[in-house]
Length: 449
Image (cartoon, rainbow, N blue to C red):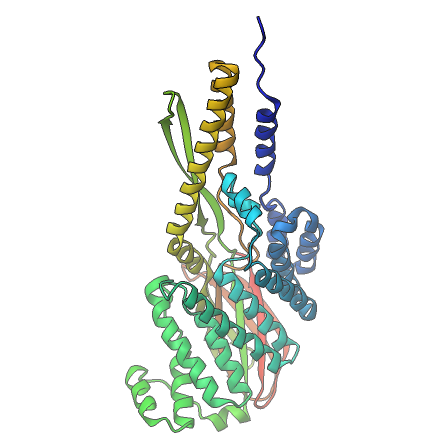
């Protein structure tokens, strides 16, 4: 009797599909990166990301440049940080035109075959970090260029989604723009940016549960009065009462410390599976699996920070200006319908391909061969069904900020990081912080707790 062999092409296809399954971005090194960030070893954290460059691969080049940009920023290497963040931005722009063949491969396996181009909020964070880098380099005009890029990106997103997207504005980006414009003496643009931040924080409260930072009221009152916008000033007075307003001239004769801290770890994506056994045309069970991504939070233990100026009887507290975890989760929920539709189409295509192969094997080699081929391809279909779990993992959970107005001089500053129950989780001391008349001194810290 003639032996029936399964065609080698079926087995080759089976194993090729399983090989393609191993195309996800590396994640094992993040444990080492986060450990070094926790210990304040920013240079070591950066060297770990650099060591893993080849493991990121071409499809995850954007992630590599994002991670290097962040670790270099924390290490104080601002020029090099901007080189990597700029490279990430170039990759993102190039990825607007996608390869048809790559898309086709992704339809047969999963989206990890596609080059990662970043979430919308991650693309905005690129410019935010670059703006801060330029501030530390004393290049205020370049920092403002990054702020204007944010405006352009947000307009593109709103046009792309026909303003049906939740993430329409970035309140912290708008507020930082206001600070930059005010420092440059462009008060009208500063007021516009502060007002956009004010409107965005109204949406932030509704969408992400982020309250309006208290200092926005003072900014709107100060600038509307300085610009002679008396109707706006009166309106802001009605909303922000009992706020002490510092005059523009008072600010110009004094200085300001702008303290920003990045707390905790960004959320990471995980798989959420939907499984359903269905009978195929021959009555054999075929297991359908749909993989969808969801963000798993890694909430920070730090509720806020208190800033004490040594030698002065004064303190300030930080306010939440950007809840990255909340934005990430909401942004993903906002487009989960589109992701689900694509996942369903992909699973349907796999099912159809498996049934076609099974039918061909049955016709040529008999029923047993058809059952075996169908089973193998079903295993491959389930094994390769994986959601795209890539994200910018070196981002923080939250960003908080305080504005401390000081007379010119040199100061020693003590910062207490406070937990949810009011306990002090950590203390840090910063010495010889120089404040100049009319100047703004930025100080950024990362707390992994």
